[in-house]
Image 1: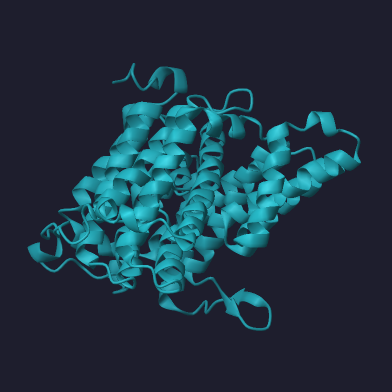
Image 2: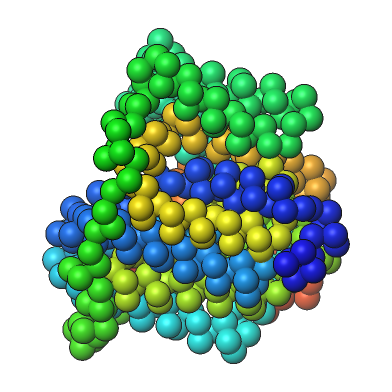
Length: 434
């Protein structure tokens, strides 16, 4: 195992990777409850979606860890599940069974694009400065998500966002966890994020903010049946041949494609496994991600994708695929201990996201800000992710500006043809699908 996952070469060990896997799992365990609630609004059985979510995450993550050897964890994507429910099913009136078929087809197409190396070539064509901007932008995005989920930043009708109620007990718990984690990390404790979460849970229980497990029934629960959702994506493939479903499939592909690209670049950069600005074993990582979507759709959940919360595990030292293997095991265990996961509240995971955002934002120092033609697209990539609440939108805006500024600067030949094609595609996306 040590040799297979290249522990010595990466400068890591079994203990560090295990802690990293658990940390990432805890940072994204909320998806086990949020996803069933979201897809439940589409009329799907919440119990079946819970099981499908855990299994899709476990299988997809295991493939990522064993095949691609990346410390990246997969699960049904938050933005994609909202699109599935509120736009496709409720907005367009498409049955959830047919919507699942759309997810399945989008996953299959992405697998084919990856196997033909088209997807990998597109990622390799992205200039280094934009890759750095993507990583930093995702850092700001997840920090914003953390601040929002903690209640530290809230909606404000006058200024869009504003400071939350800092006297609220749950907000204070999140602030406490953030301070503790910062102190631990500043003191040189690599697992400071993980220990900070544990301390927050204990303090939350002491003050009655986090419920104590009620006996054995509050720890172990039955695994809900998959029967209501399993195989529905396959059974309804004949219903996807409509204009509406074509748009739906393209949107699933678009968001999954570039969210995954951005996440993989960000995690690989943070883990220090990027080589000459390129992703090692990129093809394997992309196939693993797309396979997760295919498996998840068959089981009964929306698109499964790489999670930016994977950087929480990287933040405590995770660098190899064993981090993903550990996280996959945690998702399988979660099937049997689902009541216990209720103690991992938003206030507990928020500090981890905020701190990881700080770590990822450090990549901004390597962007060539003194080159205006580079600074503009990099700036918009970073800025638009948190402001539009979309990683894909940030990438799109930055990629549109890049060829424009390079053309005006007289450096058209330095731009890869794929970047020109992407700029056109993104413009068309905003016009017709945005």
